[in-house]
Image (cartoon, rainbow, N blue to C red):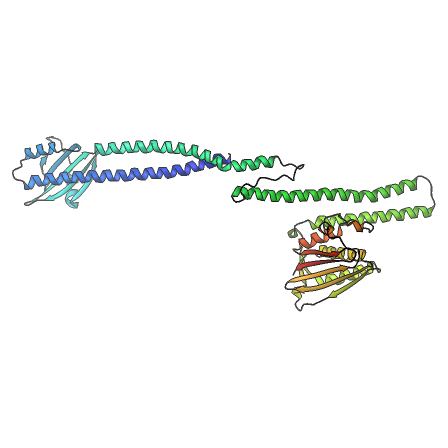
Length: 453
């Protein structure tokens, strides 16, 4: 069922229920008023008849009957008077059948007043105390005019309720369509957005109502999708290119070597060259795997407490042994007294990868293969600063250098794939940290990492 139909139905049901309660309340109050008015009138008639019967000596029974017939205002009105012992002494109409049961008379004597229903008629019995004795007077009639008004009111309310419900349904359908028309416009615009035109955006309208918020949220999602799509295209293109280069080199070398018989040293030379290409491919593959892992949700990783100072010394010793030409100056500016100020909750493997990449980049691009690594703490933060004095990064390229496979124009002569810095940035972001770059072309590059502890 469409939302427009649901809104129209629910709106109709709610308004219909309110109108029904309103109509029932009016009918109930009108019915109470009719009953109250009827008993007031018949009570007055009974008292007046009793007064005439007991207190006016000049009024005989026949005269009283004539007076009662002439003053009859209710349909099928009857009045019967009994003495206190229950003997009938007067009735307005000369009828032979017994009109009132003995039990009703006794009940009137007990309670002094009684309201009762007899078939479709309503009656009232009272005990009236005259100057000399008490009598029981009972009057009843059919409230034809009162019930006629109620029937007319019931008809009017029923017709009005039905017409109101139908009108509400039509009005609800119309206004539901008006209210949902912006959504239909958004749907129409969204249908036109495909993988080929992700740059298109949905109209945000006035920018204040719920539909506008929906459009704004959808546009923000499109921004993220477009960015991810462009990164994916760039990633696939660059990864394919980087993998194709060593594969082409390996294929070419092996084909040339197999074209004719060669000396053993030539085969050894070819195998060494192929081995270097394979190591290059292995390094690239590891970088791609690390990059993919860095894109995971941090909650899906196995986290543990990592002491950053111990991690830095471990990386320092490992990289020094791996390449003795590199120099890593580790400088601890202020060592905190509390161990908690040195601990980060995260993935030790990913943090090791990020810091290793930063140090290796600094050594690679530094003119003297030296990396200055400063460590400090500040108000719940761990700050690492990796500095090299080498080729630097131009101001324009600093905005792009964190993208996967992007390499500066002055770094083409250095080995690498443009993964290390991007990978480090993703890992730091994954640990809710921040990586910033400060660089001057041909002077220095300073990369600062801030991690919460």
